[in-house]
Every structure is written in structure tokens, then in C-alpha cells.
Image (cartoon, rainbow, N blue to C red; front, top):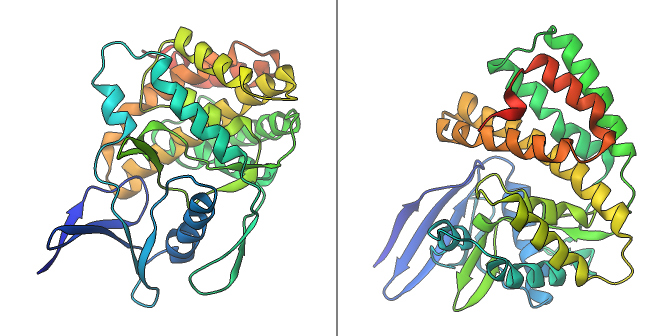
Length: 315
């Protein structure tokens, strides 16, 4: 007897069900909107990961016309669930994750056949995409939190500053970037780490996924641990300009958290998922931590402080 059991979804528009067939289970992913990305591209990226010996859900069945795919079930245990229970999170908990990230960043594949037997070429994570993502802060956060300036004036100045920040990025867009590499997307599967939610992968800056992991809005970690994880990663790289990497890491962390504030506000206002609002204060804390480390952020710091007093110091 086959039975579909709803699974609590993520921040996307997809719907997930666990399919039980006797002793076997699988995951059915429904996506009526953006199904090219959420079904076809998701499977294509998973194929790239598995080809490179990185554990990702395998495709069992597809029905693109009916808006779903059936994939391997990785269970319910995430790295987040494991670490969130611990009183003392240590570097040792992140070493396997950094080793996995190194494997992800060593992927050379840029083209893969989808289940429609068409070549999917992984796009570049260019400056235009970074700018559009950061601008979600203006598109959504300002609706609930109007700035002291008019929305128009604030948005105009904000977008100028964001564009300047992207021009200050030093490294080339030449690495596989998962784009959502954080502990909630890392599953524990038979003592291995499995990677999910990979449909947004692009070819971009190697600092992005590390920033996503270390400055993760879902898991609060002390600055001392963040520094240890960063240094552990650095020591395992060859031919890396550390100063350029650190510069890009800080810029991308801030751009990502501005995007997250926009997305989480959108989830609350548009989709009624108000629980995401609880994580926004920590995003502000992460921005505040990084914004003080590099003079390139001076204009952004002044703009945010002038218009959102005390937000950078929220606890």
C-alpha cells in the first residue's frame, strides 16, 4: 500500500511528501511554479554531485507534466538538528563539513544531461545576480520597516553602494557554488553527509559557500568559533590569496544576509510564514560583525545606521 505523508517544507514554494511502500520510502517533490528549476535543474545538479562522489538524492521517477519528481529519501536527521542540541559547538563538528565543501569546490563539471535528455549548463553567479539578490532587502524589508529617508531615496543610495561592493570583489567566478550551503541542508545519512536543496547552484566565488556556512542565520555560533572554522578552511587551500579571499568572504556574507532579511520578510508578508521573522535580528548581528571589519563598508554602515537606528546592534 503506497501512502503519501506531508513533510514540513523549507523556504521555497515546493511541497514535499514521504512516500511509503511497504518497508521502502522515497520523497515526492511537487513544484507547480518554477518547475524547471525545482525539478529538472534540481535533479541535474544532484547528478553532478553524485558523479563527483558527493551524496545527493538520486532520481527514482519523474513526471514533469504532472509537476513532480520522486527521489531518494535521506531521512530527517540534519547537521543542524545535531548541533542545535549541543551546549558547546566546537570546530571538530565542522571539520567533516569543510572537507565536504572542498569536494564540492573541486567539481569541474559545467554541463550535465537532465532527465529530459537536454544539456543543462550551470550558469555564472555574476554581479547582476548578486545585486538583484541584495536588492530584495529594499523590495520587501522596507514594506514592513520604512527607512527615515523616503523609500525611493534610500533604495537609490542602497543600490549604488551594493553595486560598488560587488565591484570590490577580487576573486574570479570559477568555482561550483551550492548557494545555500548551511547546516539545515546537510543531512546525516548512514554516517555520511548528504547535500540537499542544490537547485540554485551556480559557478561563482569560492568564498560564498563558506560565508553561508559560517555566518548561518539559523545556527548561532560565537565569533571565536567562526574564526577557527575560517582558518581551518584556509589551511586546506593551495594557491589562495588569503587577503583577497577574506575581503570577498566579508562582502558576500553581508550581501547574503541582506538578501536573507529581504527573503524572510517576503516569506512572512507574502506567504504567511511569520516564524522566519524571528531570525532577522541575528542577520543584523551578522551584518554588524562583518561591517566593522572592512572600511569598504563605511558607506553602507552609515546608511543603515541613519535609517534603521539600533538594528545593527540588535541582540
